[in-house]
Image (tube, rainbow, N blue to C red; front, side):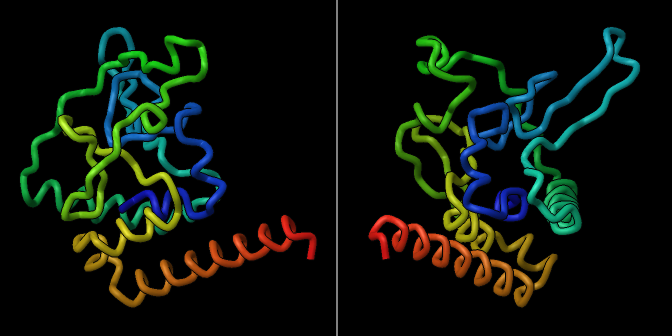
Length: 177
């Protein structure tokens, strides 16, 4: 659900697999993960970096949604999944790209919260389009409640209108009208 705010334009979804995360995971000193945890060699200084937002993201909406999701996890005492380990994908092994989980993933099923899960795996893949991200956002009761249903409806309707406008413009260009 965070991806709609983190990647608010259709072009943002071309970043996935190119040093931008494609799954809702975390890892230690791994720039391809949604959350990167970096520490010094003595583990005395540690920081966390949310790598999902693109430069087009509104930092206020991202921060509000991240805080709502984080508070929900704390209140429900959700366990932190293990850190993702950097296993090369088929594309990497063939020298065709960096860390592209989406390109090699099997078709995904949708969870109740709108997130995508690869069959046989608990890896939650991030939406691969703005429309999918809007669907996931609307299906997430935590963020909808925290930011308010009117805000979510307004945001997703504007984003869907933007996608329709871009598609119409591209179609016009292709038809030469």
